[in-house]
Length: 196
Image (cartoon, rainbow, N blue to C red; front, side):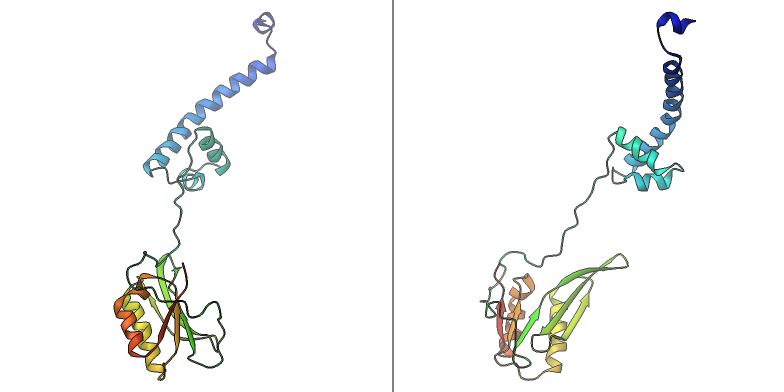
């Protein structure tokens, strides 16, 4: 009777009654979502929040969107050994000619970061351009000069004549280091660096 007087359809009335019940049920869920989100400094998205609450992930996603709670996404930095000019930059003797006609004519090296079971590791290999084979390599937990020296020790044990060998790398700080450059000079190796 009241609905007729007010000019409201019965379906509209029940819609708002049910909506009120749903909003009251969601209040506890919303509080729990906020609690988890802020306890983790905004780093948790709906998937991680859902793991802590036994509710459908779509509902958590919808409520987080409604509350404008978005996870903070840290951009992962790619490893770069370049730290600016810290030593002598060698000329580029390769000039994009990566072919070799004999062994120990051109060697290439670089440090690469990769993850293994959640741990960062750094691989530093020496590649011979002639047969595209690895002369030596070192895997380390940190990209330091010790790693490069160990890689060189392994390479120099295996090979004997290095005169006029072109050893090419990027401009990473390890390759600009005085001790690295001196070791190459001792073996009469021509150091080469790519352009920035």
